[in-house]
Length: 482
Image (tube, rainbow, N blue to C red; front, side, top):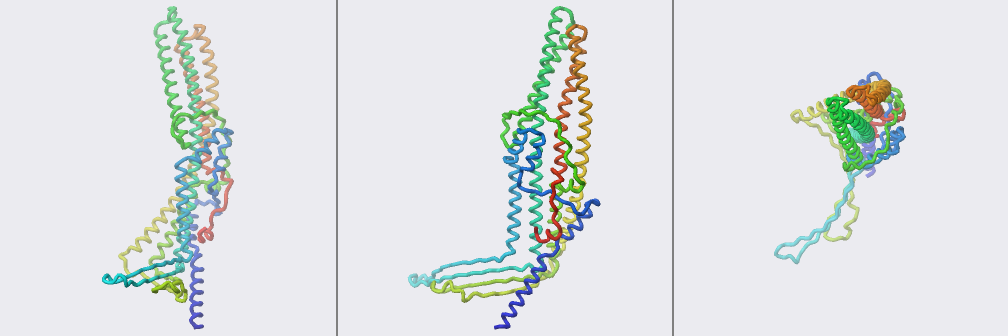
């Protein structure tokens, strides 16, 4: 009896040691080594902005415009947008998947209670009762590290889903801000067109009076009618464009489009360029880069699982079992028959027609594809940042030129209207300088809105504030499924 107990103890201890050793294999190591080749010589101690469920930072980003209505709309969108709600459900599904995988770390316990009666069909009164009670508990020891790799893959998948959710949240906030400024631009353009039609009507009255007096030819009267009709058409088009912009904002807010928003804001001057920080901090603050890297870690973990399939599989399990069946309930729940068993098996696939080999090759192919996607994501991130900075600088330079052009055109228009009222300027020349002045002012409004939108684009390209960062998962922490 002593020898048996000692043997069981030694066996259980050996299995525990094997489980401990194999359960912390650095499965993610190849992923980190392969990723370094795609970082284009950037430092290895990269950091990544933390992805959290708190939207206060995203909302605070748009406080830089000092517009309370805009901030309120961003908050409303992040609370009500259906796409964002769907994205958070994806995060929850990943959490549940990780919870399900980690549940295999614990013993599985089950029990059952049953009752049965039986009798011959020609003697139903002489029945026999039978009662049963069963209890079982099993625990599979992760000798080969399959479970550890699965947990690591699920953990990386969860973090990747969180990064995608964060990206969706930032995109929605940016969409709201763009739509908001588009509405304000539409209001300014409509006000400009209405001002233009007032001028055209005033000019046409003068033209009609002069034509009735016989001081001008009919061609000037017709020209005045044509320009007045064009001004009316511009107002109709601007009103339709404004309604469309309002509906777009309502949709971004998660509302039904009813053209009922009352926007009271103005187009502010664009804020200063968002902080660039170090290049590695800047790129690694982007949720898409974070998601691509975590997807790659997940792929390497899945490759590790597939690569173990061709080798002999050593499995070990610990189980407790109890099965009581008797004709009465007396001593039905007696545990005297509880039995402990420890088992181990070694299995090897001898021939499968190449199925396992194909799965391993497919996993390796997925691994290479994940690496290439990761590298391309980094290149795209750099391209977004460089392009956004260049466009923002270009729009700022154009703004200075457009401001000068608009100021000069307004002065030419003022002088032209005075000359026309005095009768020393032709109607055609007046319309020419007026169109030039209105076009310059319209272009200035469009440029201001474009600069605001480009600031938002650059802010998104930088992944928010890249100076706020936390350390990225290391090979050791990732191997433990963290």
